[in-house]
Each structure stands twice: as C-alpha cells, then as structure tokens.
Image (tube, rainbow, N blue to C red):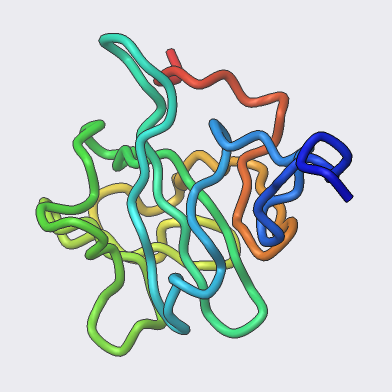
Length: 137
C-alpha cells in the first residue's frame, strides 16, 4: 500500500461527528462525586456553567445563583458542599439538590438553578446542540 492508498488518519478516541465546541469534559475527568466549571462559546457573554456528578447522576447548570445572579464558586471547579451531596453557593451559603437544582436551604429557597441539557457521548460530557453558546438573558 502506498502512502496515497492509506485511509485518512484520525484519532481513534475522537469520532468525527463529535462537535468539539460542545464538549464540556471527558467523563473520566469528572470525579464521583465531583463538579467542573466550563465556559463554552466566544465573545463578551459566553455560556458559563458547571457539570456535577454523583453516582450515575450527571447534571449541568448555568453558573448563576438565583438569589443574586453571582457565580456559585470562587475557586475553579469547587461547587459541592463538604461531603459532596449538595451544590453550594459560596457567596450566600445556599444549598441545591444535585438531581434537580432546587434550592433546599438559604436565601433562594423555593427557586432553583437553570438546568442545561447534556448527554454522555463517546466518553465525553456534551452540551445539547440546541443550547446557545452564550450567557442566557
């Protein structure tokens, strides 16, 4: 087989149809329990969110506390309360359910985090194609 007869080279771990602009992280890099912040998109208002995992549950939310609109974290990827069972807003101490994003304690009780649709595809956590890559209004 000559060099020109060889099939095109591709990375075996990256299927050609995976939209890399929507990959949040490889699933293997998301601890259990754990969370990772992400920024997708470009310009002045890219989408800022986080993905959280506890067991088989993997969810993503916009990184805004419903109480005041501030990001929930001060340090990169630190979104969980001690013990890893709840999401915590570092600014006001509000606590949120991982499964639903519902506030269960703090100044925004009765409100919740804005969910983002995701899926695990080809070993990666991927943001749904229908989500605009900009901060929500």
